[in-house]
Length: 126
Image (cartoon, rainbow, N blue to C red; front, side, top):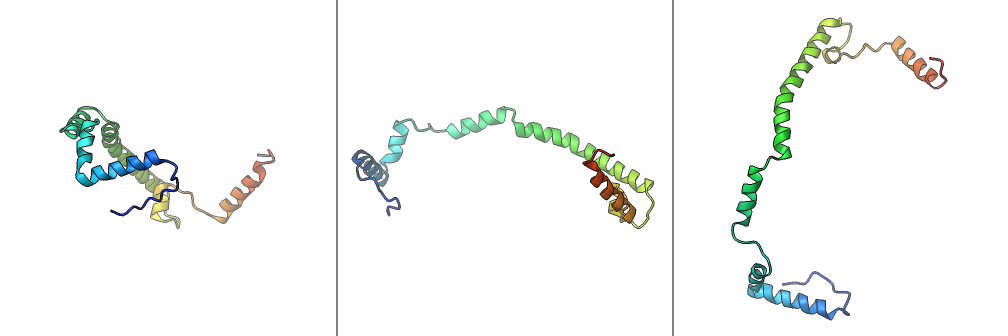
């Protein structure tokens, strides 16, 4: 077993003795026995924990229920809005996606009006 840890503090002999004792226990298999004696987990601990977690309501289950109820309604609302936007806007050089989202047509006049609004925004002359 190689030692990857460099000990820079030789003035701690108690810690050195404890590390040596632990390494000896690991080599003989006594570490597992020591873990059982010093408060390790009993057999079946993981099964008991998993059974308790399955009985309890979790945040994940609650979010899953909310998502499964809201996602179809949100998708249907998005489709309805897209259809209404497509029916309400003429195909005046805009792409299908721009019309479905409801983006206004970009013209030189709209760009200048936006620029003028931004310039006059700070001086209070709206």
